[in-house]
Every structure is written in structure tokens, then in C-alpha cells.
Amino acid sequence: MSYPAQKLYYDGKVQPATSGKTFKTIDPSTAKPFAEVHTASPADIDAAISSARKAFPSWSQTPPIARSRILLKAVELLRSRNDEIAKIETRDTGKPFSETSTVDVITGTDVLEYFANLVASGGLNGETTQLRPDAWIYTKKEALGVCAGIGAWNYPLQIALWKSAPCLAAGNCMVYKPSEVTPLHGQILAQIYAEAGIPPGVFNIVHGDGAVGGYLTSHPGIAKVSFTGQVSTGQKVAASAAGGMKYVTMELGGKSPLIILPDTDLESAVDGAMMANFFSTGQVCTNGTRVFVHKSMKAAFEKRLLEKMECVRALEPMDANSNFGPLVSEAHYKKVLSYIKHGVENDEAKLLYGGFSKPKKIPSGYENGFWVQPTVFTDCTDSMKITTEEIFGPVLCILTYDTVDEVVQRANNTKLGLAAGVFGKDLNKCHEIIGKLEAGITWVNTWGESPAEMSVGGWKLSGVGVENGRRGLNAWVRERSTLVEGSGVVGTVFAKL
Image (cartoon, helix red, strand yellow):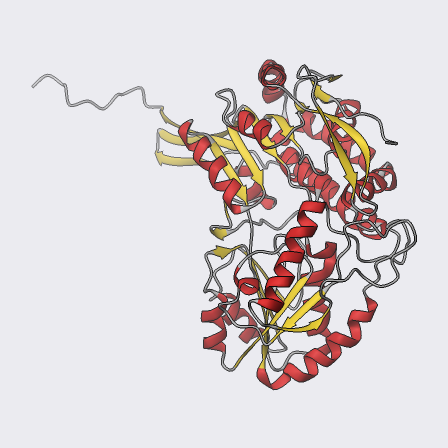
């Protein structure tokens, strides 16, 4: 193994785990272990939370403008180390460096910069309402306390910043558990925060599997849980949090529809569908995996899609020309292959491209990695397993439709409601359709972009609450309302007759 051991980080210091247990991380591109990570014990988690609780009174009372200056220093440090951190993200996730260096680190840092500037410019201000000439109501936004963040493996650093940026900007402290599959960003981010001036205990890292996450999120010292992951795990975390009346934000799974109207430019339609399914090797919760194509353009769409599939390049991850990496782990690789197999053998969908074999031209030395071909099924129906369950891999399913009313009904026929999108030249028609789709994140003539200014969150079983945007900051505060009577006279029914 060629990477330093990853210990815990709390109370402003790198700390060895008291459990004595470790686990190995695996390079997805080669299937070789390359780092050892310490597993937190309950005592370690208690210590991290205790450290955060000690730091909270001072940090929460630090003026927002002062917190902002510290966070903006962290932004500066992240920007200056962009490529260094991106290389680590590539090693950890298997994503091409061309992606991690231009998306993961940059967009995560954008969110930190956004919230730092937002709290410095009145984002935490309350409201005042004149009730009577001598009476008024005012509100004040206050930090929650110590919060738990549970990260996902597909966008490690970005998700850590999506959670920690508004949390810290609002005056809270955080104990963060990265995914055990991709944990290497944790210590780096903690040390960057410390270098920027974050006091000890404000941001802490614990490592481990679901048991570690379960202990952390159910801990009585935690005021809020922010979780990103699959629906079934999110339901358990939310249920546990409900027992302690904790605040929660849940960003969960999706099976999102992408609707292509018959007037859509063919090139845009194909580019949008490919970005919605093959970017990040399809390991994106908002992927538009159900591609609804009008019957009149199905043949042309499939022909152009097949031509452009040759532009998918599974190369050595650091190669600047690579745009498609391996899946993140062996377990996930087997899961995605099982869905492809089911699509062929049980659903009996038509395999238009891809399948079971690995991509062409994998470089020497990478043959044992968790590589899978980008896969396209067509002639799909709404009842197939591959069109109803989240695969979280590069599997695109083409479904055809006749009318707008029909496709809207079919698009909404799911328990999930994370994202949806429409492609078409008639923007009025696109807006009309978007207004009927049951999803919290929607796009018109594009797919996947999620800037810091855009609040994002799922409907139905896809989540609770939002991240990013102004509403994303409000998710990390509680509001106190105060009524002031300035006349000096107290209204009472207990006056002398």
C-alpha cells in the first residue's frame, strides 16, 4: 500500500482509533489495496462529539463575518491545492482526473465560497414585523449545535463540503463520517479547515462502516443528521433521528425520467442522454436513467447514440483524454452486472450497446479493475426491473411514448422523485411539462449541473429537505420568535371590576 494510514481527526488533531481495528481501501482501477484506514470505536465517537460540544459555544457566538473570513481562507487553500486533491479523489473513486479536477473539487469549493459569502451578507438575518405602534415581533436564526454528516462514495469531497459548508457557516460544529469506500478526503479537508483558522473541535472526522454511522447518528449529543445515500439506509437513519427529535436532511436515491420531445435537436438529445447516464460512470443519484423518446424519432435517436458511444473513452484514469472510469468497488461492480444480466435474461430488453464484457482498450495493468461497459437497453417497458430500480451505474434504458399526457403519467409512476428533465425547442411546452413532473430537481435542455446557488432536494422517497442555495442555509438553523410589548402596559383579563 502506497498511501499514508488514515486516522481519525478530532479536537484539532489527528488521532489513532482506540478500537485497534483498520480496513483497507481499494483502487477501483486496479483492484489493488492502497491505504489503511482506522475504524472509530464508540469511545472515539464520544470523544469527537465531546470535542465538538466544547467548541460550539464559542464558534456559534463568533460573528458571521468572522466565520466567513475563516471559511474563505479555506476556499483559497482548496483552490490552490485543486489538482493535488483531485488526484487523490481519482485514486479513491476511480474517476478520471479530467473529471475530478474540473468538477469535484471545484464545485465543492464553490459551495463553501457561496455560504461563506452568504452569511457575511446577511444570510442569517432575522425578520422584524410591526404588530402595533408599540409592539413588534422579531426573529433570530440560531445554530443547532453539534451535527452529524454521513457522506457518500460517489462525490466524496464535494459531499463533505455540501454538508460542512452551511453547517459551519451557520455556527454549528460537525462530526463527519466519510463513506468507508472513499474516505481519503476526510483528513485533508479537516487539516485545510484547521490551517484556515477553524478552532479545534469545530470539524471532526471519524471513519468506519454502517455501525459507526449508526452510533454517530443516534447519539444523544447530535442535534441534526445530514445523510446522503440509498433510500433503505436513509429510512433507518431518519427513523433513528426521529426518536431523538433530531433535525434531518436526507438526499437519497432516484430513478429519474428524461423526456425528449419530438421537436428536440437530435444532437442535444443524445448529448443530454449520455451526460445523464454515463458521466461519473453512471454513479450519480440524479441520473436520468429512464430516457423517454417519442416514437417518431426513436430510430434516429438510437442511430446517433450508437455513433457517439464510440466517444466514451475508458483509459488510464490520469490520462487527460479519459472520460469514463471503473465502478467504485467490487461489490458495486457485481451489483451493476447483475442488473445488466437481468435486463438481458429476465426483462428481455433489447441490448443495443455494451453488456457484460469490459470496455475496449483498457490499458495494461488495469485489466483487473472494476470496469464495465456503458450499456444501452431499448424497447424497454415500465414494468422491467431495469426501469424501476435504481442501478447506480452506466445503464441507459430507452422507452418510447406517443403523447405528452401519457409520458408525464409514466414518468411520475415511481416512488422516487429526485430529478427529472425535458428536452425540446418549445420552452413553453417544456415548462408546462416540468410543472407536472413529481421531482425536486428539474432541468430543461440540460442535465446534471447543480451550482451552489441552486437548492436541491428530493420528493417522495428520494429525500427530506434541501441542500445548497439560500434554503440550504436555513436547514442548519433554528428560529426564535420574540414578541416585544413596548407600551409598558400588559393586557390582562384579571383587572378589578
